[in-house]
Image 1 (tube, rainbow, N blue to C red):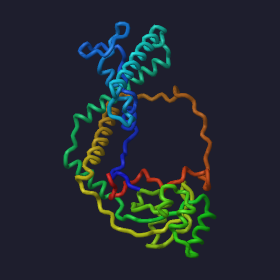
Image 2: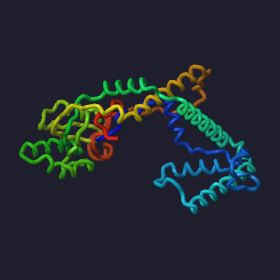
Image 3: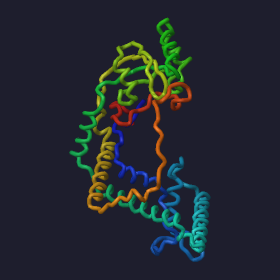
Image 4: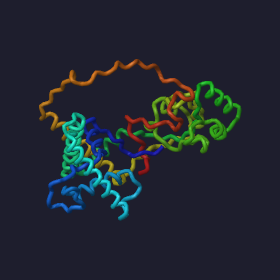
Length: 319
């Protein structure tokens, strides 16, 4: 139930740049940078160390290791050589003129340049202490003032939730019923214990129910997209914000996101933009959807109530 103190909030344009950061950082084979060390040549075409480094970096992006062994590096070099051989053959076959290939090459070129520009801006920009403290004060003002310690039992239907409540009223221990019947694999083995949390970390029906409970009280059945909950409030306490220094890096990141967002918006205002929606592909009409169904198989995989993405996380978050 823990989370970062500051929740990222980025407009679509900046989110797009973040997504581009996840795109392969591919350099064009056969670079003409004569100053770069050459790691291999293929039919007279030089493959450079920067190209190798970028390719290796992409391979390690989601890997558990930080670096490769000499044997692994040699395999990466072989892969890069194979890539160049295939690219050269593709050029001979005229694939650069294929509409899809041309579109992909153009998009990749645009992504790499956009990513480089965003990184250039970030490197050249440093938030002031006043900006960081203003961001901190805003986050503190928006945070929940109370924390709650509660347990819950998650089941698939309202009838099951009502049966659970009957057992509890008959003297059954909440922890025992949770272990036996709750479908929340994240908390059932702890007797349904969710630990300390702020209501901003919960979906609204769950948080509303918790706020209306008194210490030791058990809720009526509460429906969320995860199923039906029976909640027991253990205790409440004041939520103190973390010290400024503890979240300074997160504050820096938040301020930088806003600065980058503002920079992107400035560039947009300076640009001449003309949208042509008639050229977009036709889309099929979206069928209306009814309310989410409850019950096994209709809700997402069972688990603790998910964070609410539009509200700040708890102040007591661990980092």
